[in-house]
Image 1: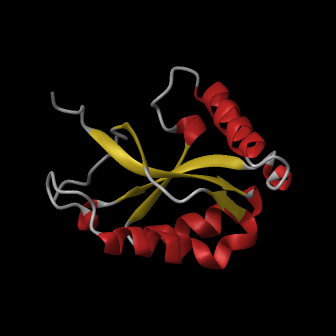
Image 2: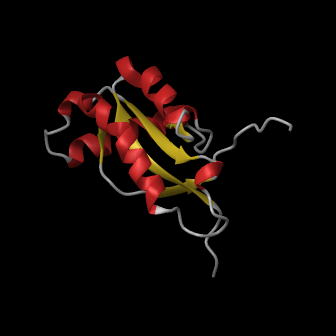
Length: 126
């Protein structure tokens, strides 16, 4: 049985004050930030974002209470990191975590990727 096509993502809570700067940093590394609320995966993206945020905050039993109003996002890997059907290279993981390091006071995440339905990206015609 084959797994449905999916996107490997890291789920991150991001302080809205740095959301734009983080996105710019990620784009330069061919990493893509998708707010869960607008990713188009859920019928009610706003509700899904609230549930994901609540679960992440509550799982840390008070350690992440400062992130209770932060934006849940998925960070996905661009085409330069993909190797067909092969798993993502470890260098892709390292690049992602390195990109998040300078933003440490403003992001909360648990290392490890999840799979979500493919995120639709409009591609430019060559």
